[in-house]
Amino acid sequence: LYEDPMSQKRLRAADETPVPRSLSARAQLYERVFPQYRQPVEVGVFSLDSQRAFFNDSRQLRYYVDPGNKPKFNLRDGYRDRFVKRDDGVKERLDHLLRWIVANRAKLRSTHVSSSPCTLGVDFVTWRGHLTKLLTTPYETQEGWLLAVSKFGGTLYVSEVETEAARVNRENRTERHEEMMYWGYKFEQYICADDANGVPDRGGVVNTNEAFCTVVQTRLAEHKLLFSGEVDCRDKDPRAPPAPACYVELKTSAEICTPKQRSNFHRYKLLKWWAQSFLPGVPRVVAGFRDHDGVVVSVETFHISKISQLIKNEYNCWKPTVCMNFCSDFLSFVKSVVKEDNPRLVYLFAWEPHRDVTYTVHRDSQYTFLPDWYIKELTI
Ligand code: 0WD
Ligand code: CA
Image (cartoon, rainbow, N blue to C red):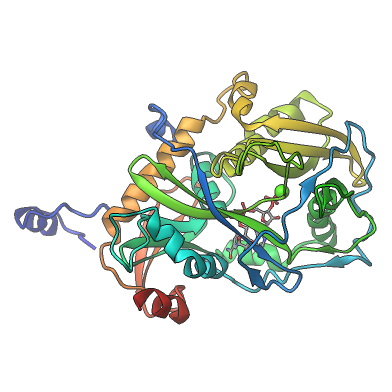
């Protein structure tokens, strides 16, 4: 954009700040004090049914049933005959979250007295999963990302675009990998009941179209955020603290047999688990450790607030402050780049491991992601 130093000079003379062209993701640059992260507040929920239809309620919320320490669940059960898989070739972008915004806009605005009628009173709208990717970027060495950003009504919308590499991986998964992706959902079925007083139905169908999502509002440094994330289940005790503190994230992972495996678990897996649950304020992860045949051999609870202690003995390990500072600086970078308020204009931010974050600009392209129905609803 401003290739020669002259054009930057001219900009400064016109009393405008030069627009930075890239952002480094080197971890050492982000080792400073932990940025302010306001306690996330749940402002709503929504559900997606077995057909992926949206409902502005908690009908898909499930309840945690303690499986004990050594449950011997067979995660392979039902893969062939009781599995309905969501079509992950269908790109939904921010659509479900936008649907929630349209249905709950009055509620949003009333909490933001200062905002004008067609603005939301937040700086960023996105999925929790996209923020997780940002948090882990300074430590990621395998997979890059593409994030599309459009400014509309003063709010920046951030929606992921599948990279070519990710598409190739998705289209060439082995049968073993496909089955292992099912294991996580099967684990959820062994643990979750549909009612607070019910029991899990291990003989039922696993349908990955179904989802329960929380919508939370928070602030990272000077950035007001509104994002949504899928929640696996909640504490069934009615005296449990209010959401998101009552929520439980479920995970499966290969059983840990060697010191090397333990170290890798701390260095890579716990980073992803921490980032994903810390963002919406989900306090615990319940992990099922499984063997090579998909049998859960042990179950362990990880408290998010204790994970940074747990990893401190690892040499050269990840640091929560680096994750949060990188995310905050990326959001500042986005704010400085995306100036034009126009839902048809997309700034595509790209990152590959060992590279800086850069961006390209696209007008009325394949990358435009804010749907017409949303723009109409919010413009009225
Ligand atoms: O279009 C896209 N690029 C994406 C859409 C990427 C990620 C999510 N989504 C949408 C879907 O509508 C999904 O219902 O967001 C919802 C989940 O959002 P999230 O919570 O922000 O995503 P993330 O934190 O990455 O994943 C949470 C859970 C996963 O659990 P595990 O324990 O494996 O992390 O959501 C599921 C998965 O069970 N999940 C998805 N479900 C539907 N579509 C997707 C996806 N693309 N990715 C993860
Ligand atoms: Ca999960």
